[in-house]
Length: 70
Image (cartoon, rainbow, N blue to C red):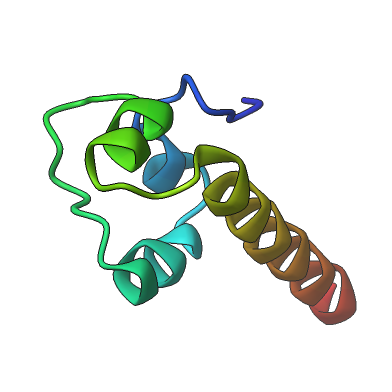
């Protein structure tokens, strides 16, 4: 799955569990009823692009960590 701004937050977490840390750090409600990342960010006054970049960095770090272990 390729998560983006139109992906729901629960789908982000299912696909990339490490993103939970980013959502928690930013205070983003992860029980958003399946709303898209973009929608939740806008409702909370956050830049969707900036949040997406943080999530992408977390995903990349998790992938690197797995590669180092394997």
